[in-house]
Image (tube, rainbow, N blue to C red):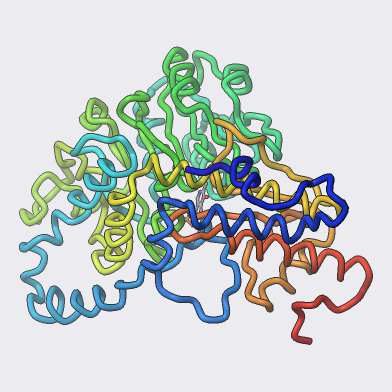
Length: 438
Ligand SMILES: *Cc1c(COP(=O)(O)O)cnc(C)c1O
């Protein structure tokens, strides 16, 4: 992987020279980085998006892979259309676990029998946190970050209210994230469950999962990690890190499509002792016995509730082909190069207009998106979307720039960040930007 500082030496002219043009120099760096990118071939394996100049939101909704339409047609005509109900016996019953095992192997560092594709992330967080709380009888506190994604906070508040537990908030810097020190301060012999995000949805801060997991265990608690913003882009070692439970989205870096079902992970050693609260027929020890009384399956299947969303698993399976071919290590290396380059581009085009970077510095604590803040960003984002430059806006004043290494090019980042700068300048002067159609 070429890093931006090396690539800049490929650019003629010196930054101190008279006719140095930082905009042209940056564009040349982007070209050099794309030319040297060992994963460049993957960008053409995604469906074209006519009219899109820069897609900087793959961390919120990944793009579809190029052969997905053919794959869906094959599924509809053959698997569903021809096999009909026989499909359940011929593979669909196993599909949430087969695909879970594959995801575990390719992206999560999880041995087989621990990962499954299930409900939405929200519902899975509820099921696994509730199961973990029940698994620590006598303990009454739930730990969650006070700046974590809303659904995570709301679910924990709801569980606390329903179970008579208390929420202990980890006070989190919105530009940073949860550190072992901050978590250690709220842990005690009362802590039942710790729910935290591996990568903060706002700042992109990557938490020290092994160390925080170790601290939670030392306090006697179980830990549930939310991997929504890290699965498929950061190296993850659930087994090696001793993680108890985990949940994650599949429509972000795993390109599963809008509303694709989430995955859950339950460490093998815990499966027997934990029971989840939505006891449906699909988690029963003998699904087709249709008998009285619920008895949970002896394995990871007990965490499933109802009929799995088979059709909605095709896109993530197609993406796993690409993730497996590229390898998470190479994907992460490109993620770092993209975020470093994006930071540099922000320095040229955006920060001079008074915007602030509210993400961690380059290094181990950085995920695959950057957030930059400015009071005008709500209106700026609307203008950007009109011109095909698509980051996302996060209240109150943040633009998130998501870098999805398999599909994002350096040129796209350069064009997108330059457009943010143009719209900021236009917003400040009340002028019409060069890219505006109005
Ligand atoms: C995206 C995201 C979710 C989304 O949950 P859904 O149930 O899919 O809506 C939850 N938690 C985090 C941290 C996220 O980033």
